[in-house]
Length: 617
Image (tube, rainbow, N blue to C red; front, top):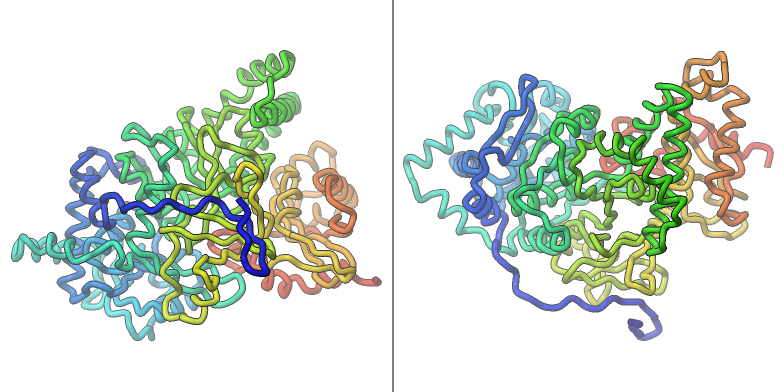
């Protein structure tokens, strides 16, 4: 439908229907209902001593209640803040649940943030307690946070406490057990004190263009997303999930609530590097990840074939081509030709069946968000029999705005808006959103909150896109990242970077060229793949630096760039490039914790390289 505003034309989806929030009304209610409704012996599972150790639904709830009571014993009450700085673990989820049961607002912090960034979030949020993984993690940040005015107690998930201001997780639980013995009704009283509109969490944005802002999300915000984003996936208590994305990421956090709500068994991956091993051990039916995880898994499978033999590498590449062609037909609703169907069946026996086993062999759905999923990845996974659904959202929207779902998938889109969420497109192409998941605002930042909303109350996402004729949302780029060449042409870098990464030799790509005559690219090669190529071509180069300077390698990348971006307009074409010798990382501040490019940092750090690309013009 077309909505005509005064002097502005906007495309808008049907507005959300008004309906009452279904129970549970708070996250505390969700945790309690999940424990009583499902009573799993292995609700949460973690690796310890080389073995998976289960925590039952009842134990999870009891320990969470003890944390809530322990925090209350320390003097924390409704509306106080407690920060969590730790990798995924049962303790992370138990702490989150304890905070929600006690009416305490928790503040997740990425473990990849530097000490000064951690200090900023603690100060800005006014957190009174810091939960942290262990002594080594504390040693990394203690100098920076030593002067935090608000921090009263540090709690170690693992290891012993160190006195009055540093205690262990076990000690906090014991405080809760003692309070329960003194006052058996205390935990129920705490749970009753929270309401749907209370703040549940402050999640700080990545801060690609400035200081991070605390996004205020209520119980109602998060629970609306749990309900509406999951309704088409037919999740059941027989599903098993592997938790890989950090729980400080709102996508994984809401995912965890979905897992618990539907009685799924949750396994915590040991680490990102261990995720492939954990996938084979756990054999999940549901797997949530950002696109980079799926790209890495495909790269790993391709490299394994390449290192096995040239024949197997050739078969793998042939099978990938067949998967793409087959998925294009099925995605478009077209009949698959007999010859292609025969090739696909043969490739399934040789390659796809093994590829599915890489994920454990039981996957029903992979769900991805947080960044654009390359069309190529979707086609390859779908063609190989691994269902992958792309969605779209932001921290400020709790997070899901739209999603491809079973029975309603369109390649190149992020799906239709979920129930009760409306999307419209402003005159300048910006995506605007309204619905029950939209944040309350930015913590202590009234000006930023006002700027984030239109005069009639729609949240401005900062993303550029459009709704197609079938109501599917297509994302083009970030509004602030569009740049203009000296010839006056606007270019969307993310789309071109995604095209470049379709090359198996390209791990990361950053498009540059704002105010320049043409776009260029900084490229990080996939050095494992590149080393195999060098051996295949008998090139006498082994180190990343040597490979990046070799004329034949430079020629390879020139051809790869030309092939992957062949469909671009002439003004969008990458005319020059530079190969970087090391990956862009979160630790060096080049990427956000959600793996988005910090363009200002890249421009500054690689200024000399960039100037060389445009020298002599």
